[in-house]
Length: 109
Length: 117
Image (tube, rainbow over all chains, first blue to last red; front, side, top):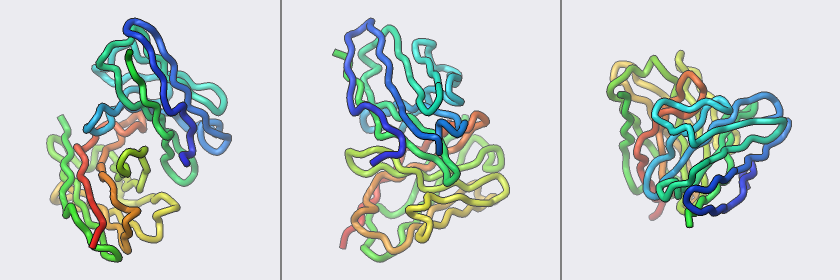
């Protein structure tokens, strides 16, 4: 099982908002390590969506936002679009290195 | 724009060593630190290890005894060796670059490696 816990699946209608949670522990997120989020479309490599908890790389729409509190983090997506249908992963670190969540499959109905 | 390309055999025999290379184009190997990540079919992502700016490394404890990541700065490449492979090592292997924000900013397309006799 993954070190970081994400809901396996979520769904939303176009135009709606969804939030994906990522729960860690005092060894990773709670220890102050940053959280990053990735979007993986079918058959492609993951793409960095959010880095350093709440920062968007150039070219990422502001519909995507990240936050972190305590031992958890969240990715919020507003104004859902059909092309947002993908698997979303959170990633943080612990003293051993990088750790990932198990991924959340987002379906846009 | 920095791009990454993985290369190596798509089929490896059990007990042998899996060897992959990541070639960096459009940028210098010295400007980031680098990582290997794998994804088993239909499953999530697993971090394998990092190689840092000065060549030091850090590995996933669950793979540490079998993993070596190295780099060739003259060729702008870094490599993964995973020894004593089993079917459980069958996966798509990605190389990635870590940007200034510590996120995995740049990814290769990935290469599928099957462990089978």
